[in-house]
Length: 229
Image 1 (cartoon, rainbow, N blue to C red):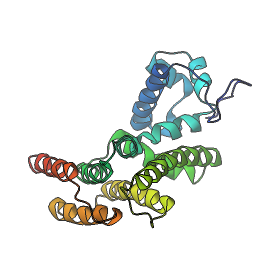
Image 2 (image 1 turned 45 degrees about the horizontal axis):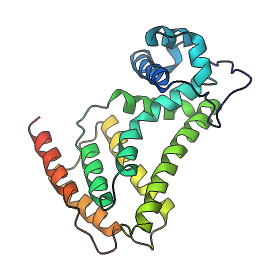
Image 3 (image 1 turned 135 degrees about the vertical axis):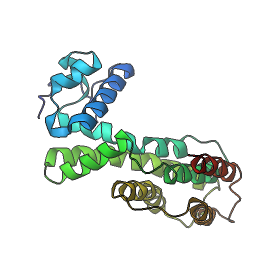
């Protein structure tokens, strides 16, 4: 499955600086094909054809198939990461609560990106190149979370005695836990009871148990939608 990488012009992450639209098409095509056929049955040409690009466009972004799979799999956690990393001042607690509730209320079926992340994790155990690529992608997401935690702590929104690395890992592990439980078909807890636990957990991260405001309202909306499905 390996792709040969061009000799020069790469960014530190292994991809050349190319239009973001092309990369998005590649990732969308990869997610679809990996979900349909499985990682081991997808060729470079298949992804290029589905994305409407040449194989050279893939080479320009990714040094090998493992890097492409890892980047595509990383999308499973992107929503949660971005929801926390891109909030305004005073909104961190609300964003944490809303994001975790949305993840928990995601239904019993995995999204394609979530299923792909699980497949990548399994494949990474037997393929060193993929293990390294997936590790880099997930470390990138963790670093984004850590940066958001550091900023929130400096702004007085999180307790100063909490280590940023530990908080980032907590925020990362929560959605992964929901994901693996869903994949195994384990019935989740009552969402309204879970909301109470999440509210307590998020309040415990703030200096004085700050009220989560908009996050609580978003939780109620998410749970109402879930009850209606």
